[in-house]
Amino acid sequence: METRRKEGAEGRAELRRSDRGVDDEAWMRALLERTPVGVLGTTSGGQPFLNSNLFVYAPEEHVIFIHTAARGRTRDNVERESRACFTAFEMGRVLPADRALEFSTEYGGVVLFGRISVVESEDEAQRALQMLMDKYAPHLRPGSDYEAATPADLKRTSVFKLAIEEWSGKRKQAPRDFAGAYRFDDVRPRDGD
Image 1 (cartoon, rainbow, N blue to C red):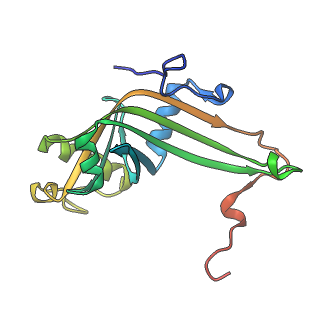
Image 2: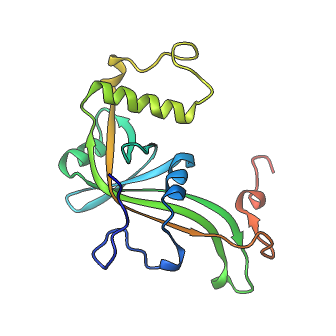
């Protein structure tokens, strides 16, 4: 089932800056596949909580898988309230200007809204954890470079699945020859500098 951004004021994924909106689902999928870290938003008693985490996007199911400790705030929140949101993003160059207020950056991001649940099936949890390994260690193979997750390992972790109901993408890019543009890491002091 394909999900799209809902139009109108009620759509959770509606963008204020529609001029930066991305309707290219292939671009949104690619960003989710290449971005290393995302942020999960859950609530408990009206209090929002964020959890930065590694994740994997499963395009054939249109879901996000993440994992945390077997017990903790994220699991408690998910068990109380299934509504959740998730974002993954990347930063490009800093775009200087003559006035501080006009400085900007290049960026790209995707925001997802949906229902999150604890993966109860051992087979599905095992598959999700292997997908995470394949994303973050594609050069290593289970059985030869490391031992794959075991049933005992599954008891020590919670695997979550966020079923995407709505999503939106947003991007800002400047021309390659934008005067003075630079990468943030290129101007930051390094350890020992």
